[in-house]
Length: 437
Length: 92
Image (cartoon, each protein chain N blue to C red):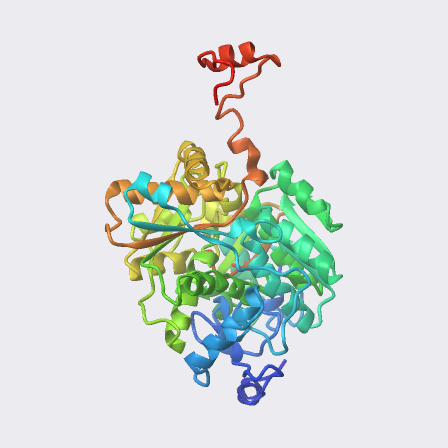
């Protein structure tokens, strides 16, 4: 392993490497979020000294806002238009393009909730139908850059889909570890890509512990364990896209689901980086986190004004958010406080209502995590937390077809004979006169 | 009476590369760790701070996080497996 001196030398040389597209590499090192110790850009996730989590450090001082903006606008219609803000030493590429998902103006939902301006960032429009395509699109090329030939993950389902698909597209062998009780749709939508699918008898936290152990034993890239510092960077692209889609402006408030807390904190980081570079003038938005009551260690820590999250045993229909020991929980609590936002939790019934509310007012069918986020937005609106002149973004992270059980039985299906009279009788409609339009 | 402790890669620089250690005559997780501290110089400073585990160190007995049990007072039995792991990005 390189010493600190090598890292510093390497980062200086990187800053002066001009890429074939005219840009500079600005990624410097891995840095401990707790004690600041720096490490080379390798597969490592925790600090040797204090065991704190590592994150990627950049030096943006050579970036000029105007030329970066021009380059972004001329870039590919995928997350790679933001390559300057991602942790690569060679030009990244992926076989399954991710990102540039729609930002949809949601006037009917806004009206229902009494909000002036509401936008839905629909990340279900990614290749495997969740925001996890973003983190995997960064993790897999990074794993290849680091020389790995096998990728793996611990997943509550969406990550499983994404790792299996992106590994297949890249021609890498993959191992996907999931809790054995996962929704059938997510199991099927993972196995189809030819991954080695491992169903662990235990909850997500047990799967995560096992993968942390295995990452020390095997020379594999576990995307959310030993290459997690790089993987997490992919979530920043949600912020970049939202800001670009709003005409290089930040919204006033963003509502985001919290499982580990990584997406929540990295979205804010994305806005911060663009502010640092001069691409945005606005302050970081008010950040509201959303959890399910049946697994709300971060909301509980926020409510109790604690810095540390007490782990819980999850019991909620929102399985994609069912992380009882949230990796970035303390940082999520700190961000909610610092940005003037908060972290709320909603019941399983409110989650089901949230899914229906979003579907009926926007035409977007989201999975349970999106039900959590929509229900929390409704709670904030009803509580009067949202000012009338705010521009609000609701981040919808996944697709409703993955959690069909959540809506089963929530609406009537009218079965009829194939006759007009049966139709009218069953639906309680008046007889339509012949020839009427 | 012995328990087996699984040592993560991050600590193997202070255990001379050992990935596993047996500790005899310990009845609690705290005593198991004390046994390790006596054996391996520098280990205590790496995982403990002010008499408690560092914030980003997780310990499991038979796969269960000791925060769901009795913390360092969690009892251990002959043949138990104790696992020390870094919290991924800090769950503690």
